[in-house]
Length: 129
Image (tube, rainbow, N blue to C red; front, side, top):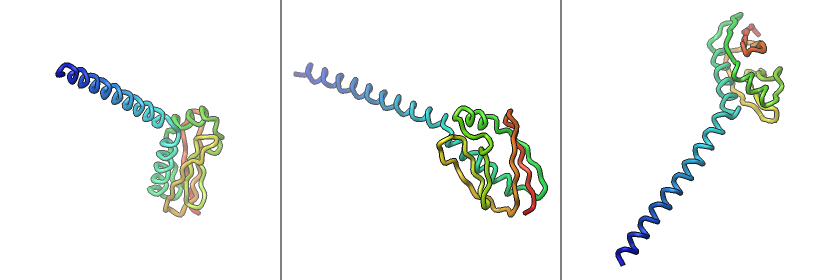
């Protein structure tokens, strides 16, 4: 009788460990796919650009690197001319063809002008309204 209980206990532990490993594998796959998605990158750049605009003074020019965002947009077949747009004190970054992008508000009452080259070097010019 003791022998049967030990066998069941070992079997239950092995099943428990296998199920935990399967669950962890699914979690790792989920995290890797989400980390390589364009959505977190859209959020990151929208917030960074909004913070740059808020910290900038009129007639200031800011240069920064968006190479990874440009590469992601090319991979996702997005319109490269509309990666970064500005409407009503909101910056929108859209790196996916079918996605909504990510919008973030800024407070400065200025007219930002955004441009970038094919290498991903971005230029943000802050003009008075």
